[in-house]
Length: 97
Length: 130
Image 1 (cartoon, each protein chain N blue to C red):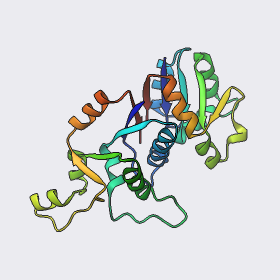
Image 2 (cartoon, chains in turn orange, cyan):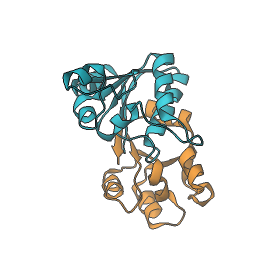
Image 3 (cartoon, one colour):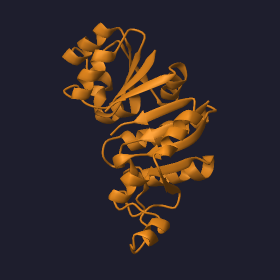
Image 4 (cartoon, rainbow over the protein chains, first blue to last red):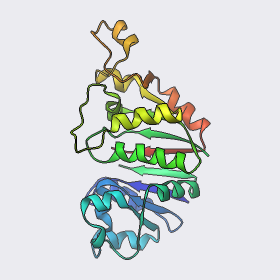
């Protein structure tokens, strides 16, 4: 039950490390350049789906990058209130950066 | 719940610092308190008093200052990270014979022990990476 946050692009070592530790009980919130890992039909989004972790993307960052409509269907967009809510639910956070 | 934040991201490079301050505001709106924000490594640049933000960008420094003043949030810089970057308060300026303080007075400089203490005193510790 860990909330992972990733703010590096999917070609980073941070993404690979994060992927290795994600379990089905976990959630992953993508921030900053991390949002690109959730692009529809990308190899990174397929790799994330295999882990079974719930996938969230910070709406402010996705919207600033103009990719809201390009995200996969299994992604939930979150605002800052919902980000806080995730931290209420998950007692621990692991930041990958 | 009691939250503390660890900020590693500098302002104006990526979204990390801006995300952190907006997260703090949202947490307070949801009824939580922010015990301390600890700035480490490049995160200490957030306190630089001389930074000038372009008019069409959000002023992260002002947002930190507002957060500290309105919600009584402690903003603490890691002393080792801050001094190396020339980020000093008036005490350190005198100690090292520098002309002036370079950080905004809403921030204080202290040791890494304050991060450990924040972690022990808070129910949630959220890290914002660079």
